[in-house]
Image (cartoon, rainbow, N blue to C red; front, side):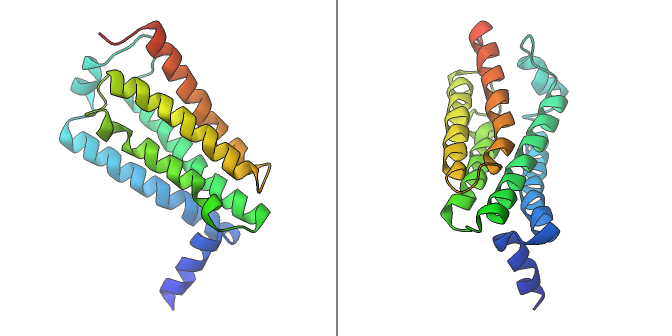
Length: 166
């Protein structure tokens, strides 16, 4: 009975419990992955010194930015389901985007500034635009929650183009 009580708000995104569940699931995964990054030595003072770029904030701020962006992805799903009534495959577009974003440190070999980081950021921007277009079909408001991700990705790509990694 308890599982059914928790299951319905998350999948069907009903009420405040649905909002909390959709945001909390992504934030929990994000915090767990960040903990893993620190445990592996891929994040922290020594790791960030090796990849300093001008105009990019410190790792701690970047982690906070991504935590907010991924929380907004969970909120986008909730808004989409609330306003469109559709909890099918389209509603999971923001979760697919979050999965791509959370996987970023792994396919860049520990957040190294290399070609994989550049193209990974480009893929993130393309995936964000795709998720915006998918959500736009059912609701006009939900895609706006994903727009900051595209803006952040565009900023990072522009810095990487201006200051290419050595």
